[in-house]
Length: 472
Image (cartoon, rainbow, N blue to C red; front, side, top):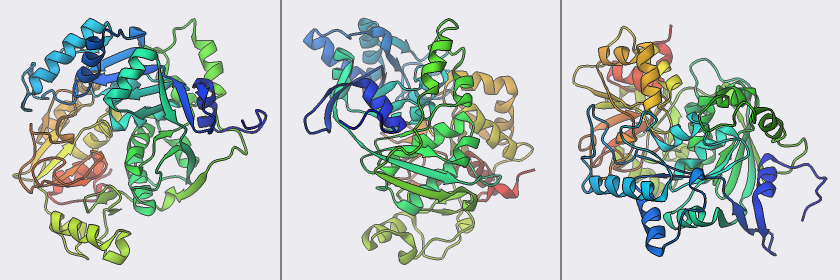
């Protein structure tokens, strides 16, 4: 055991507070879990398996479930869904969640939404808490100072039944974003720039703490976007130490500490900072001021360049010849082609990465008074029922609809294609999602991921476009 007086990182502090048993090898451990969140694509599997064994959920108040992955997002939706067999997932999850006595945000619940949006906006994820969910983007909650990571359905059963998980202690990394990001450059752009520079395996096996001037300047929802993309860095999770912005966001949320509990919570949370001199296994520095709006050109989130750039050569791509040539072939591109010359068929704003109120506000500023290009399909899916209501109160829905966007109900929607709704065969799509894998948004659909502003600007132009050209 390290000297208890030695400076500790934020990750080390949370780990020590939750480590029940530390193995003799210093890596294997049993860790206490504070919150378990499920969704209908995986939730019914874990809950039904526990029920079949006669094992109850240890503490139903610490377990939550939402309908987000399989539900349709069309207005007037119900239990029916375009995904083959999807209705059974919904019905079985509903029955299992009710039988287990856990909190369920059902399809018609006003707080329904994407798990990683709901968790943050309702105060379910808190600074210093351990949060798990059978979904790879659970790392989103690290923006609140929580230690949050994705698990499988078997681990979800264990966490629900015992309130703990067996795991190996990850390594630690700190990524500094030095300087201030330029106007028009978002958290999504910072993330894509990090991936482009250090690769999609750059954070492999690590808990990544984001620090630096650019992080301190970010609003809370931008931090959620940055931490969301940590899984694309192959990291276990991402973390940002809680500060006054975090506390202001959490105060008064339905599942946050009450007014009576608040002073003690603040005292505890304020101590959850990396100490000066804390050791990390690796540290990286990124010049935030040098980053431009980014967009992907290939089939990996690390295949990203400035929106004003050209498709890179093999030597510039930072990838193997095989991966490079496969990406070019799939995306129907040639080296040296300007991204701005790529005509798009569709635009999508949504997903757990970029579907929060601030995302929709920024996209609406680009869209206001303009219209999407003729023949282009454009869709906006708010991340939660709460986001949708607030956006409609501000009139954002009218801006989107007047610009030619479809305005949908909350859910994951076309972030991923699993046999339900999709974009067309080999259509080129610019999307605010987190993954541009082959067929991610439809059969051989070609996805370019970018910020909501870049998606909006591209929808207007009909080509991949720099949003800074349309800013006031």
